Image (cartoon, rainbow, N blue to C red; front, side, top):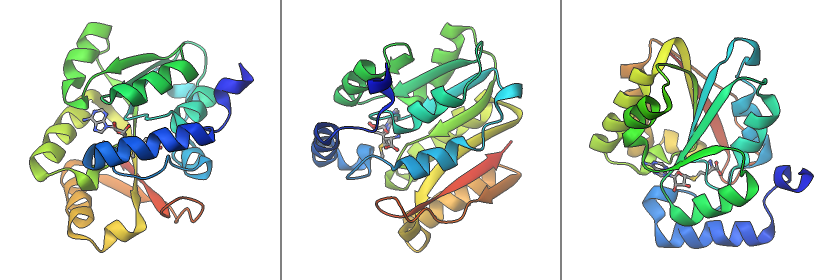
Length: 201
Ligand SMILES: C[S@@+](CC[C@H](N)C(=O)[O-])C[C@H]1O[C@@H](n2cnc3c(N)ncnc32)[C@H](O)[C@@H]1O
């Protein structure tokens, strides 16, 4: 049991890098996020008032371990990962988590199948800045529609994305969808350094 919550092994890092080389735009990073970034993004969750959490693109599950540690009994948690090899690694680490091998685009169908009408938190590991505008909008439409009023969308961005057009496009997109957006300080212990966007519906 303890093993499942440990940081990814060296072999997992290698598999992650290999998936990046195969699918650079959907994986979007050469290594999993750090535990420091995972703790920061998950620290925004208020477990007492939370009944549904959805994680996008969990990859090898670095955020998942923190979400599970924070969740209270009775809270529902589902994860959506479209890469088969990532999903295989994930299922070995977290057999107890309801994982959908699917694209986030299908979130409405997944939630309907699960009988979930609204979501408290969506934690995203997706590489938004690698997506074109049409895909970003499609994914953001389903995200905002799924959140309850006051629900939160938590995602991260790399610091260099602030000066790159794709990263600025993503920030502008968030501003068009959410009335309130906060960003964290920079997590230097991440490759590359990153920060968290907290977007409140
Ligand atoms: C940068 S990795 C993040 C993995 C992990 N959350 C982390 O922070 O280390 C991005 C993950 O999102 C997944 N992904 C990309 N597009 C997706 C989509 N449309 N639906 C579901 N998962 C997607 C990729 O397969 C990959 O596992």
